[in-house]
Amino acid sequence: MEAFLSRTPVFLTLLAGLVLATLGLLVLFPAVALLPMVAAIMVWVLAKVPVRYPVLVLLTVLLVVDCAVENPYSGHWNSPLTFIGRLCFINLNVVTGVPGLGFTLIDLSVFGLSALYIYRRAAGLKTDGAMTPLPKPLVIALLVVIGTVVWMYLWGMARGGDPRPAKWQLQKMLLLPIIVMLFTVSIRGAEDFKLLGRIIVTSAFVKAFLGAFFIVFIARPRGLYTEYATTHSDTMIYVTGLAIGVTSYSEEPTRRNFWRMVIVCGVILMGMHYNDRRLAYASFNQCLVAIFLISPWTWVKRYVARAGIVMAPLFLLYVVVGWANPTGFFSPVNTFKSMLVGEHNDTGEMDYRDVENFNVISTWQRNPMLGTGYGHGFEEVIKLADISHLFEDYLYHPHNSVLGLLAFGGVVGFSGMWMFVALTVFFAVRAYHRAHPPVWRAGALVCVSVVLAYTNQCFGDMGLSSWYCNLLIALAVTCAGKVATQAGAWGSTTPSPSEMTGEMVEVKEGVGRT
Image (cartoon, rainbow, N blue to C red; front, side):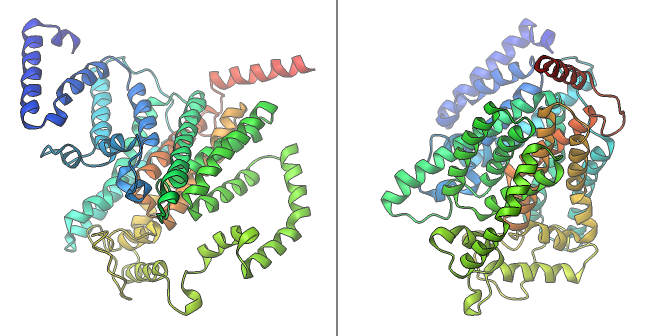
């Protein structure tokens, strides 16, 4: 490719085309006049660097900027990261005003980088180095996801489904295996866990500080009511960041890691407080329980277990008293009570979510094995409040994505879509009990935590339609598979060279302390 571009006629032709395109856009669409030049520079860079670098940069940008498609800050404020977020998450024809660009920058990046890598492999280019493969069952499960998405679309269309909403129903799940492929060729293995941890924690810090700034300095002074600070899906980033902080200390309980955990958890909990999403607290608590159950009996776990036994009666009393009077000191009890009891149950009126769940389950019961297929909404056995003026396709995207998947795909579709989730936990736990470096073990626990947060988001808040949910679960799938391969948790039982190096370092440190 470089030899082709270095030819003078080819170079001059491309340069002339670039100049004409820039001048044309300067006249017709001045806001994007520099786009051809930027695109040319990006293509030149991408032709020279491994796919790893643009993928990791893209991941960082997507996690840091505002997820514009989810209406951050309830539409009351545009942060410094709002415009970049609009470029990433909203169709470019809407953002730029240029017709014909009916896709997002994420779509363009994912398919473009995938095509670039496939071209390099087909051409035998060595730009991208060797990669640690994922276990074959995990790869097969991801291929099954693609097959299931295609089948649910064809099944829905054969039953008279609407292709327009079907496109949005299947988009994220169809992209998920492709994103996993990009992460697989970009993340070397467990040796990249620290880098990925820094990216996620940095993203959580940015979200936390922006959310706090919005609530304290903009919303409250203006008397604005907001249900959240940044977005619903930031819960995934917050919970993953907390899991990173906690597991880094639990797997390597040093003074430095302790204070690092305190700082990380303090900032992220502040962000969770201002974002005010109940699922965030539920997910984090479940992550702590999972970490506790999976981890061995270290002195930290023994201390926590003894303290838990001593505090159990007081905790039970706290919940009982708080359940009857969930205010003030007992307000945390109200957070969990509100997730179990509908908002209007005390008046005899069913909560909106309860009615929606009832309708989705009723839809599933009418075709439990195969579902309705994509392109169909759930049936309103009990009429819901019409919110089409806010969300036109609300019947196609129930808040409970898990029940929605059962309604649209039945047992067959749900099994095909959800198999990779179970396998991710399976490989992460196997890798945890076979890996020795603390970073590897912490990474495996973080993968389990991401799966728990993802499952909660899907069950309670349209997780299947969320970019952040899909990006982080794809990252968890990749990391769980790679650490399982490197630790010998699947296939070869021989430790990888990097793990053997880690073991040697631990032995040397132990000898030095002795």
